[in-house]
Image (cartoon, rainbow, N blue to C red; front, side):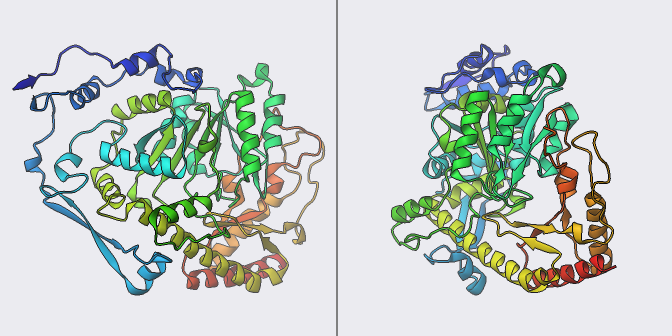
Length: 523
């Protein structure tokens, strides 16, 4: 019998010592430790968590530990947990089968019976990366779908949690991060509080423009602005709010720019599997391996799959493909960043809740959907959303387009459409309100009319859309070329709408939008 008592002295693992010495042990991954902010450099590893690692790696078979602070699992008030979920046995369209017939299957987590992640293990204190069974399941899924070289998986409490930690990993007061000129403020607001500012990169219908990204890096004046930006945050598929998706060609150009200018790429991809109008080669195949192979062929290459340097941190989440309240996602990144994020998690939020980890583990296991079944669900979900998009566009064409005051492009992915409003047709539209001066000062009253339209639609028509100004990243003349530049305030001529609702909601919304536009423009 061996008894292990916790030592009083603090010690660090070899991996943590390597980090503190700015050494990486990844094969083929360059040293990117210079990107770390002061916070992760100065943060101490949690010694209790390091002891847990030592315990987990101990070869003694009858090890008795009196070092932990967990209540004994016999006191957990759970005998079994049952998840009744849609059946994925319909090889062609499990989402439709679920909605029409309610056909289900049962997935279990047990305390005493056989399962992949028993209750007695799931509810213990664990280390930052997550419970090993869940982390391994998501690592297998990540390797199968994305095939990233030299990367590691860490669980998060959803993408918001993951991004908050990543921003702190790299952000110093006075730094600038790069992102799309229209971005989701729920994410971009996060690092503002500790002194990081955003630089919006010009977009078109295809997303961020690589040449505009490089232009900003070239003209950057460090004497006036501080050090050149070294972090690019991007949502490459179904971007929120514009719905744009980066082509493979643009991805390759952006990654090449990142290598040239030593950028870190934060690839936030919650809509990755919701990409539409893609070929479906034999996707109904009953053979699991053949189905997964065919499913993968319909997916667009990720920045992660291109990453040979270790400069990409990818965030995935279950929020858009299972449920937002899951609050469960994962970061895939190189070993250095993985360990530093782990040190932060071990002394802050701790790993995600056991309920979600148990469910995901059993769902992806032989007792549940398996990876193949999850992929069938994802493919079917994509088809369902595509049908919702088609319906939205049909009603828009019928109710809104005839007004002549708005148009919409078909998004390639996600759950949003970016409605362009032709404010120049409004009787109170003012062109060239100001002349000369700063290249970022508004020359028209587009933003004022947008605000009026938002309020009119809400208060008189009873329908709400998000105005583009909500997502606009403030411009600075120090990184904007004046020649031919149209201020972003004059380009906030859009409303963001979702097509994720029911047909009844979408139809009523489009009818009210059409009526509201007519009244607003014909005042």
